[in-house]
Length: 264
Length: 251
Image (cartoon, rainbow over all chains, first blue to last red; front, side):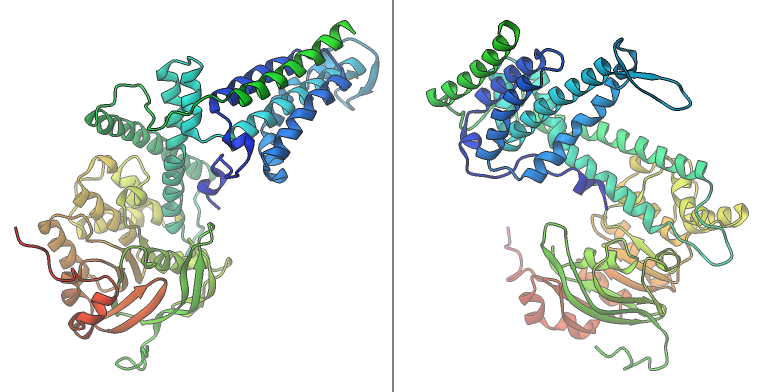
């Protein structure tokens, strides 16, 4: 119906160990784990399955709705599209030919695409667990904790914060346009495709200009209240040894899987 | 709620039958609203913040769709009729920044007539006429979002007037206007001949423009009557958050 509902909040409220865990631990674990998943060699399905297992377990422990996780992780699909040419360019055993175009796919190529698909999907699901179990405020705190520059952390935080505002504004503009998109008998309504595209284009432009001006007003309002670029928190979370140990164990497990694959 | 009391044979401009609506988050906004507005009547819709006034107005031209039946000048609102109904009822959004989406005032006022497929000279005529009506002639080339609040409001009304709809649904047209700009707007509403359903918090403007007032609270119509009667009923206004209780404290 409108942009607003497509941009649902990422955080899913649950009372789980994963939700309670410190954002810094979760962020570091996510980054480290993704790195280790990326290191998996070509077409090593057993290793990929072994690496997917803990991610599935985290989804279960965090009690995240499966449909939500699946829907959000579909984000990985467009990136796989970029990998599809590999199926045709990798030399190896021929398995199929695209009719008319005459492109030939190889077994090795297809495996390369499948490997990339599996790796990105495991990584994106893990990222979904992170964003669904950590509030944006905690995430910013975590980014700062991992020494991400304050400016970059602030940009990420405000992008998230104002995405909804801008989405709402966009959908209100579209409501206004629809309200005046009328038809009367005897006339061909709707104008040309080119005209409608022009209207949409100028709406996007309007939205950009307004967002830009809004950002200056927001910044002025923040400066008026003493903002100096460093995010501050009322109640900074404390690190728990058990959470650190849990994250370390998961990373160790992934590292062992990689070691086994490469050495074993 | 008999609309026939003083207009037995007048055509009905708006008929709402048991309209219900809930936002996607599950919050019910309208809980069975039935209302009839005869053609030519100017009706004010009052109610506290969150009473459902804007939601109700957005039902009328199908921007929001709930349960129940809505007829505009006799035509039932449906997927098939929604475009034609939008040529019958002009909706003004409360915030002119929502209403105005084009790079220039001219583009915005011309949008409605252009979308209807009217010939160019007719579009030109309507734009000129609408801007004249709201006192904004000469602002055609300006950027809407850099105008003052009063000017934005007037341009927003012009975008609706240019469509030439027989019915106007206006959401808080006098809100956030300075006294002078508010006075001019009230005078404009008085002078316009269209059927009107206007949501407002501006009780002072009611007697001059509206013959009838509908009070909305928590998505229901709690009163519907002549303006003077409603405004004299202090208990009613107080019960629905429409007065200042004991008056403002003195300095």
